Length: 71
Image (tube, rainbow, N blue to C red):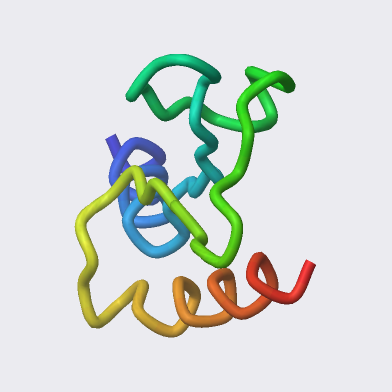
């Protein structure tokens, strides 16, 4: 039980994020890492966060946004 609680806290504190891109000729956005043919929108970063934003993970998400936007 304790391991499960620690795991949940880690998932909340460090949520997975993925950069999304537009699938050509559709209005669908998918992860660029899973769909290499998905095109990113020029000048716009579309980021999917797989967890609610809380005070506990806001610092991590800020760092993640900066690192993704610079790369």
